[in-house]
Length: 398
Picture 1 (cartoon, rainbow, N blue to C red):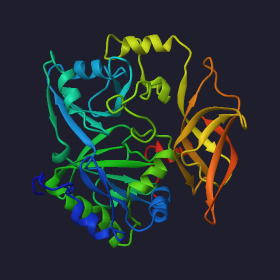
Picture 2 (picture 1 turned 60 degrees about the vertical axis):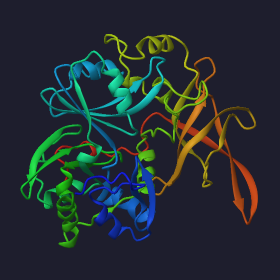
Picture 3 (picture 1 turned 90 degrees about the horizontal axis):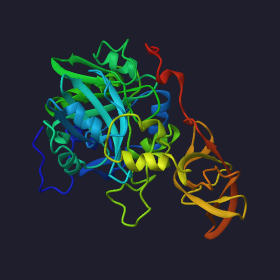
Picture 4 (picture 1 turned 90 degrees about the vertical axis):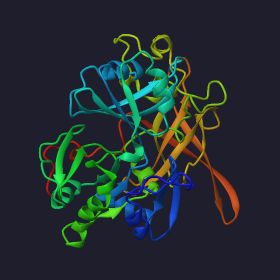
């Protein structure tokens, strides 16, 4: 792979030659300074691939940082809200980190690569925060976004596809565990992780071997063994909402980007209480989070099932029909497999109590005229989509 050309407006991932070839729609978007596919062929085909066969998503643009040194674990455990002191080598965990006021800066995953080496993956650029937070710790921090290529291989046949591609040793690989192997003489790291809520893996390689990895995976389709489709951002948005995963910038404003006071969110307000430890020693934001934990919650990001077939895009939410406005839809989809409208919504709580009834006021256009309707909403505490195959070990060979 050529080195990044920073005179270019948007960078190309090491998979770009193959991505461009398959992107029939030439529908592009930007992600962390990279040119990425929104839609390759049709959103429907890409969506059903990840739910019924196998899809491949180029996740190279995800921000990646290598953190190592004698104080690496101590530093990370002081930065994130979750207690990761027992994170074993070869394991992965989800984390969130905050500023001193307990407001979320970003979320991501930490990979314990072995010894005192870790990889932090984040949605947005975090190098400045990492460098400031590391003062006084014996650690080194390197951004490796451009130095590590990654493919997300997801769907019910993802295990079989990777096995047919020549990547072995996955039978006993459990969720959030790392496996190292070789493919055609190159080193490959596989983690049983993903952003789809389904069976899936993330495959990490040196950028020089990116095309070899891509061709090995899609070669399974060419040999007539399994169907494999590339997936763009639009289909990924659908499956991540079904899985109940949050997205900074879509579902909430991070503390770093919020302009007005009160527009950022705490982990409690994002439904991430389980990712906050109030028992471990000091970490950034703990004092503020402890104080907030002792008060009734004022608002929360929730998963909503919305009645009817009208898209509740950007709809206001009310406590009862024509009642008091209590929030708004942040992101939403029509789920083809569940046959209903699903949404992530920010709602207010009165004295810490969940609203008794939630209704969405939906505006839609019909023959160039705007109309409105009401739709009842139901909070779901569990993911909308969470099939047993997601965690089954070993996975079924379909």
